[in-house]
Length: 75
Image (tube, rainbow, N blue to C red; front, side, top):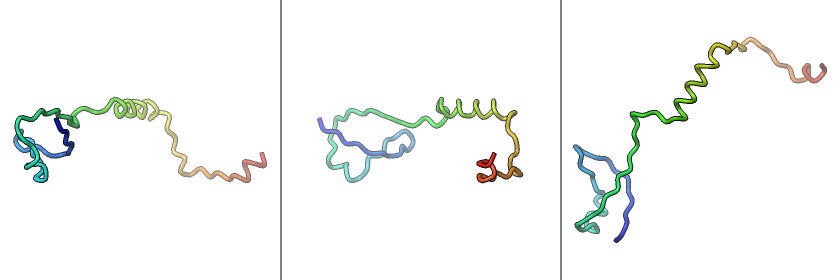
C-alpha cells in the first residue's frame, strides 16, 4: 500500500483529491482524516486568557514613567 499526503478542502462532505494524484489513486482506498477543530479553543489559549483576567486588576499605566539606566546605576 502506498501513502500520499496532501492538504485539501472538502466540498459538501466530499474530499477533493488534487488532480496530480487522480491517475495514481486506484480503488479501494483507506482514509485517515486529520482536521483542525477551530470551534474549540486550545487549552493553552484558554489558560492565557484566564491569566490575563487575573492580572487585569494589578495592571498599572506606566506610560508616563521614565527610566534612566545611568541614574539607576548611581543609586
